[in-house]
Length: 207
Image 1 (cartoon, rainbow, N blue to C red):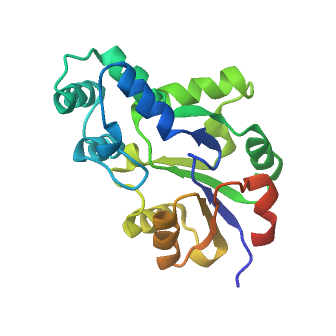
Image 2 (cartoon, one colour; image 1 turned 180 degrees about the vertical axis):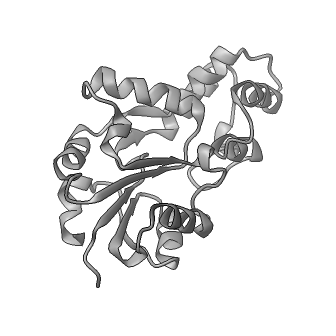
Image 3 (cartoon, one colour; image 1 turned 90 degrees about the horizontal axis):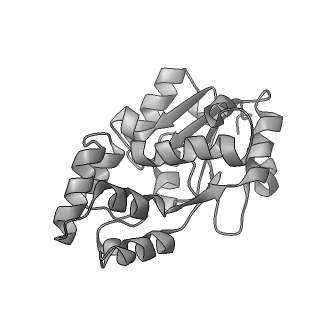
């Protein structure tokens, strides 16, 4: 097995805690029932997929959620409920990256969207450190800027080719099994970060 030279981190439930139950409760508080019928970790209504691939903007997304719910929701209500998914950074995991980023080429690859970025990027500098979250990585890759998302194998090939990385020398860390399977299918080494595992305690065995 090739020595690891490159690390690609997922964001949600790897470096940042997310909670779908909090999002569901927030949507219910504004009158939207059954949001989990439209958006979960591995199942998404096309509106949510389009948001994560940058095909719709904030306004169109908010209008789309109102249409799905058949309610006259304001943009502020939708964004409030949508952002309730976002809990906070795993500070010890962030510290591990800071301490080790000069030993590896370090990247981020997250299925996310501009609304969430507008929340968690300022949150990092308010709650974690006086430098930018993105400065931890050689390049951060976001699905909504790439126009593709995990678990599409083509998205991993795109990242490898753009950065000139050798798949066998690259470790991909993600909490979602379909993403892990897709990454492994293109030759990446993988760490499936299951519930209860953390970067700082479990990555060493893979390096």
